[in-house]
Amino acid sequence: MKKTISSLAIAAAMTFGFVNLGSAQDTLSNVATDTVATEMVDSTTSIADQATEGASETAVVTEEVVELDFVQTLKQKYIEGDPFWMTPVLICLIIGLALSIERIVYLNLSTINTKKFLDEVETALKNYGVEAAKEICRNTRGPIASIFYQGLDRSEEGIEMVEKSVVAYGGVQMGLLEKGLSWLALFIALAPMLGFLGTVIGMIFAFDKIVSDGQVSPTTVAGGIKVSLLTTVFGLIAAIILQVFYNYIVSKVDGLVNEMEDSSISLVDMMLKHKIAKV
Image 1 (cartoon, one colour):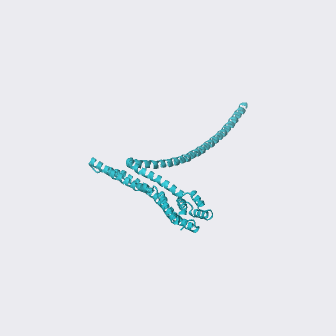
Image 2 (cartoon, rainbow, N blue to C red; image 1 turned 45 degrees about the horizontal axis):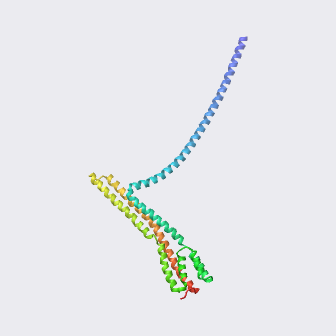
């Protein structure tokens, strides 16, 4: 009887232990599953973030490579066109741009509000006399003020002398406005001519190579023509850029000359009106 009770007790304990062990194993299994799932989600998120960062870095690097490729392409074309012939074209472009910028700055500084200036000079002549008008001309920049000063300075010699002085000094100011334009025109004509010269000499070298090889190779002919034409392309580009600046400068000079002529007529009229100069 005691053995039977003991056996039943041992069986019950073993059964309870197995149940607890199964529950513990299920709990551990669920925890492990949740942990693995969480780690998989975190790893997936990390991989996605890394992929996004990698894509951004790749885009930045790609842009940098494109920029470098453009610069390298210009250098490559410059070298392929033979630096001996490309350098003179580049010098023409640089000097022409320097002259253009200098002229543009000078002409913009020479431009004034002509109407306001005429009103100030007329007010000074009417109220304070010639010296006050000359002082305004000295304090104003530009060719118009210089012409007015020369005319007012000879007001005592008569209106004819004033007109002659204005015309003569107007020619001087026009020469100052057009200073350097002849050199700019020279570089506009010289750049494509140097390009054509490089092209002709490159073609001669290509034909010499054909003669030395004893056969007409498409690769040799095409390569030689490509290299020789690069000088013409660069020469034409330089001439086009300088021509745009030249036309702008010429139009600016023409506008200033017209203002000088109109202002000179207004000066003579003002001097006659206020009886500053004798007829």
